[in-house]
Length: 260
Image 1 (cartoon, rainbow, N blue to C red):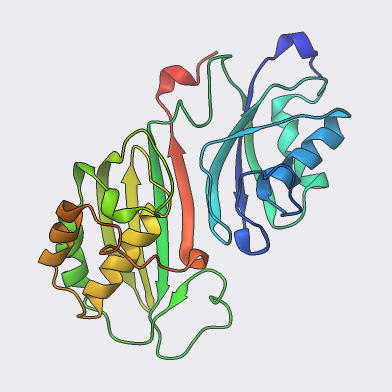
Image 2 (cartoon, one colour; image 1 turned 30 degrees about the horizontal axis):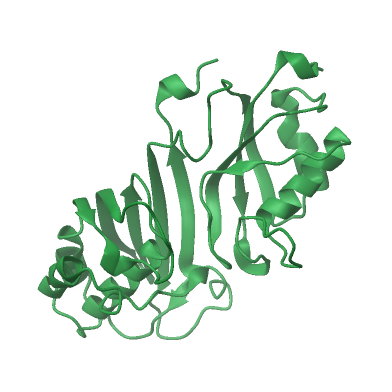
């Protein structure tokens, strides 16, 4: 057991099936069920007082996560980090799982300390739908040109203005992001698009995916992706691929931000 004054910050990695949630972020004053809200309820139950968490990524309704990260001040919680995941999983629903919990420096912030985020989009490219993949992929029965998608994706890598790949009406300080890499791969009937960046605009991952799907289906030339990026017009990018195929795969942090 540990006392409140011995630990001021805890980092927890969680995975969740976003199907039944209205996104990750708690929406105060509404009846929407969110991952953050349910997680906080379980955490507060263990602590016997209200605890709020900070999330690394604000995933949309229906989006899943394999490596979401949260941090929080433990308050009256008296469960050591090495046992916290077991305690959390005993009070959380089956579609939210705590994977790891560690003590973190006071300065650690799940969102602002992050150096990189990786999203993965899954396309089920089988001729017929799969009852097992329906909640975790976007079914496209038509043949897709993977090489063309790779060609189109190359123009997106680098530090660039991604205005063309964001939802309208979402104010941000800057639309410039560094996309460190994007890979398009196939394994049988599954096509995966993996994107790693220093941050993502609202709907950016889904709109990039939607644009590359157009390329894969022959509706857009690979070179057209660069033209859309340069045009900075979100009406030309996308459309956003369905949320159910998107996963927040992992969050990376500089080592110095994790050392107590």
